[in-house]
Length: 130
Image (cartoon, rainbow, N blue to C red; front, side, top):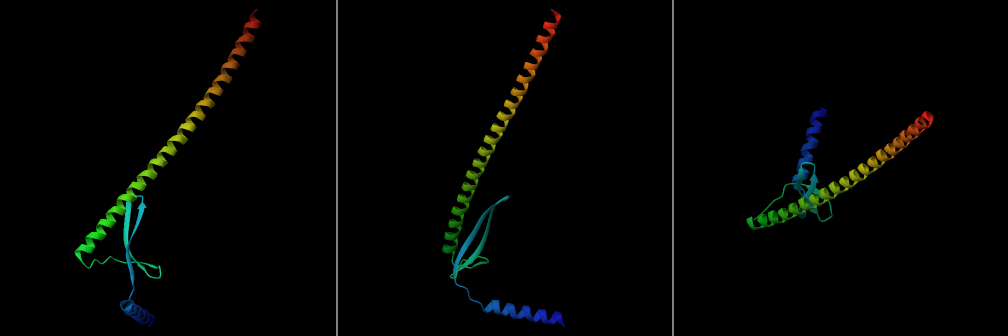
C-alpha cells in the first residue's frame, strides 16, 4: 500500500515538473578540481536560483557562440590555476629554504659548541701533562 502511495507521489511530482516553466539564462559552472577543470551547465533563473540542467542550443550560431565563450572561461581558469600553483610552489620553496637555513644554523651552533668542548678538553690534558 505504501509503495503505491509513493509511486503516486512521484507521478504527481513528475507532472508538476513537466508543467513548470523557468525563465533565466544558461550559465556554465566552472571550477578547478584536482583532476583539472570541471564544467556543468545550469539555468540561472530571474529570482537568482541555480538549477543544474543541460544546456539547450536552439541554433548553430548560438551554440558556437556559447562554445567560444566557454573556451575563453576554461582558458582563464587554467591560467589562474597555473598562477596559483606557481605561487604555492614559490611559497613552499621559500619555506623549505628557510627551514634548511634554520637547520644549517642549528648544525653550525652544535658543531661550534662541540669544537669548544674539544678545545677545552685538550687544554686541560695539555695543562695536566706539564
